Figure 1 (cartoon, one colour):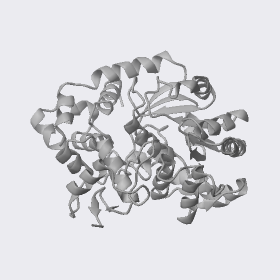
Figure 2 (cartoon, rainbow, N blue to C red):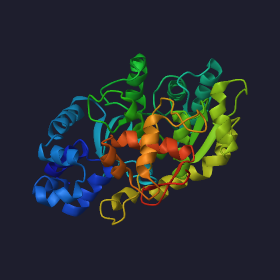
Figure 3 (cartoon, rainbow, N blue to C red):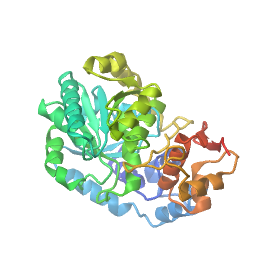
Figure 4 (cartoon, rainbow, N blue to C red):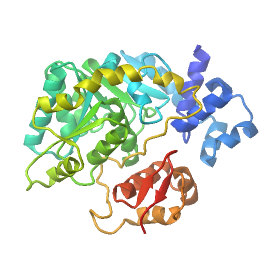
Length: 393
């Protein structure tokens, strides 16, 4: 694409309330990002169902964010605004979800194209679990795998450090703008990953670490990895839901067992009961995913290119709850009030999350989080097309 189209693409991708699916609908319908900003309100209004999205488009609310992003790209070494459809766009993001139209990248972009394993777990991990996470990450990195995690406290931090310890590849997916380090205590780690590994964010510069941003981060962690290894996780934790997302995307899910007296082991035990691979050593991981690592990368490599012309959009994977613990009925007692409101609004018919968001005036990310919690609790089920239906009264 030419420079004008690239700038328009970045602006459209950073326009508030225009998500990945809407972005692709607009590109397909009008032919280019530049054309999206040249059409009349009457032409685009049928495609922008949310009032906020239409106003944001009319006001060109993404323009300032795009200008800042372009300046950022030229300011830092190994900084890149990576657009969907470009050759270097991670192919794994074309499977299991609607890929983000734009990624902020810092570091070694080629690490996104190596065989990858995700290591996730508790932010309040025990010293033993931290050691295990670091050891697995080091061993995987030494074998040429990229270790992917979210740079949160606990297991995430240990995983990144383990890969770097052996000068291996590690990718950190952030739930903030790529210019904000979270948690702040990981500033030194972030600097090293930017130099030796790779940092990825889909959020505009300056985006703060709000709880509803982490679901989007977690879905990218699951999507970019051929397998997800969970090391210590409480029941109904964000790590457990990330594992569920990985399974829904066709990735392998593994878990390290722990003491029955450790409440942070219960989530891993729950995963194993549900069919996750019990992992005690590196060979257990290779038995589960080695045959998939290279093959999946090759099969997926060109898929993102067809997304811009294919009539059927890859269905967006439901967003998980954030790193913060999610209350799930059946595990923690009564349904929380917000989840009950969503459930009551659904009725018993088939309904799309966008409809629920409009009816309640609730942010889409919050709706998705509540739906995931209700699905895990057995109240609702996900149907083809991204719709839901209540299955229990």
